[in-house]
Length: 111
Length: 114
Image (cartoon, rainbow over all chains, first blue to last red; front, top):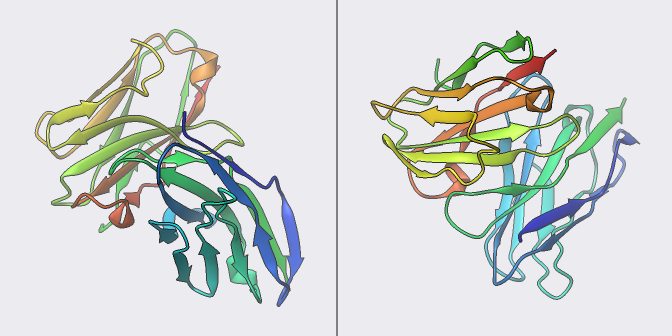
């Protein structure tokens, strides 16, 4: 079946540090790939997406590239801020409604 | 409010009790979804509605779980004879079109079964 494996946390960083969260997936065909973020006390929200191989999704300084050859969709940000502290979920979808999520990675950024 | 609203925010039930969790989607959103998120895990798909039609219920863990959306707006997830393994956060999401890009999640109902 479809599944997502993402880097275990928690991850603790200092402000302005570089962030990478690894995500790999298992699926047949060409799923769409997503990163969702959950800020403290808020609901899940879409951070970025990519729908085909070599697509790069980007938003709020975060980037992730759909790598078919390595079945990966790693999330990166060059300089994190305290406000980036959140739980990050990698997800995939093979159809237009069902999302399969990874277990989530908790990121804490210290001032 | 403008977002997806879920109630109650927290629910404590004794094992064997029935519970009902409510979701108020964003007005006008055709599609509605329920997910279950166990502690330390990502959300797992439970079921999907388009208007009042339940198009996919393949994720419901057992026949103790039942979801409905009779008028195509508010939805209720009912769990009968709750078990400890039902303890989780239950998330509702809605969207207006067919793209997962426009999916909005509520803050969830945290269910604890003692």
